[in-house]
Amino acid sequence: MTPFSNSNILQRIGTIDTHTGGEPTRVVITGIPDLGDGSLCDQRLVFEEQFDEFRSAVVNEPRGSDVMVGALLLPPTNPNSVASVIFFNNVGTLHMCGHGTIGVAIALQYLNRIPTGHHQIDTPVGTVGFELFDHNRVTIQNVPSYRHRADVEVEVEGIGIIRGDIAWGGNWFFLVNQHRQTLRLENVERLTQFTWKIRQALNANGITGEDGAEIDHIELFGPPVNPENHSRNFVLCPGKAYDRSPCGTGTSAKLACLFESKQLEPGEIFRQESILGSLFEGSIEINSDGKLIPSITGTAYVNAESTLLIDQNDPFRTGIRH
Ligand code: PYC
Image (cartoon, rainbow, N blue to C red):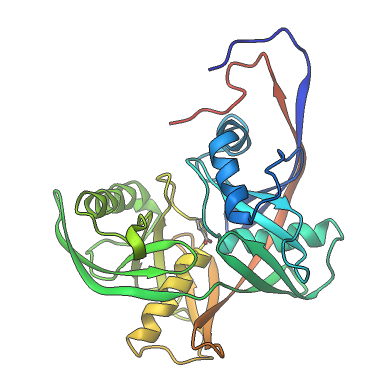
């Protein structure tokens, strides 16, 4: 921790908080550090290397919590986009975030920056389209998604052999259907331990996404509680928090796997409920380049409009990091 200064100057960071199906997004609208004028991937790298304390101050305790996802609202890089966004969480940055994109759309509407209709935002892994509807509903058209490997076996300490698919939906996922776990809210501690062990086993065995990318999201699937839905999931995020929403990038990865296994046709609706019972509706289309584009529909609400204050004398000003 850097030495205390005697300065009474408070650093001010303007934020809009939303939640999408219970999963929070803190959209940072003012006080954003200068990340230079490189590509969004370069800016993300600058953010990781030079502004990790800023990241932690915004999302970690005492101002946030392990489950909080942050979204830096930056100028668009593409002339047809309304903004660029870099997503981050309790331990680092995310490539993309589906619930977060829905939250950003609702925050932009709250700020009167966009009307209902079609828009797009830029992320470090590609441009994401979205349709803003009435009643807080948003459909995102995610980055191209795909299954990388099917039915991969991993030996998990204390559990045994677990099989799953590796898929990209804007983040890397290991998707497990056979696990003997009951996907209910009262079991989150157990589900967290179970999925964390799978993640550690993947790392220990060098099982990765494409080009050695780390698989940092683990997703379990089970029967829905609401019979109108097709599936319930439990998603473990990179910093060991579980996703309260059905996870936009995770649902995208699931849609890609279903398509590859011939269980989902383009245009068909797949209703994915979260461990809380909140819902995303997903579907896919195959674009003119032959790529699979998932659409994810969800609902978000604005919770707060705040100014975060960072006092240079506060020993926990940069957040509590685990
Ligand atoms: O909705 O894509 C998502 C997401 C990723 C991590 C938390 N939520």
